[in-house]
Image 1 (cartoon, one colour):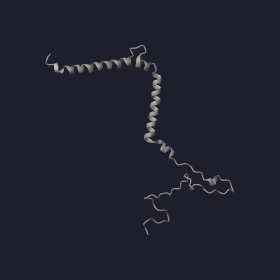
Image 2 (cartoon, rainbow, N blue to C red):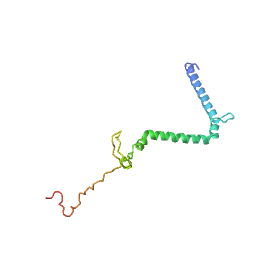
Image 3 (cartoon, rainbow, N blue to C red):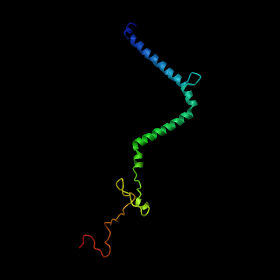
Length: 135
């Protein structure tokens, strides 16, 4: 026994750590299973599982929407749409003169110019017309 004497303090320290760890684990198990009459944490969950489930669903949905709005920014797309500008001349009563505009005049954004048809490359020229490049 004299050969292990220098390491007795190390053995006592390890034993103390293991005792503390055993006490800690037993406390957690007692908290979860509920050695008291109230049933502990597990009993609380079993008594209120519907409320907890509803709270988790609502909280998860709110957090999901917050992340969605923060990451993808759909509100930028929603509020960046062009707005219709009404031409005031169409709704002004006859004989009334227009007032001086307080802001610069804007053209309605709903007017779309007609597109000109693009001639195809392989189309034959119309009768009576010369093909391009031939003189």
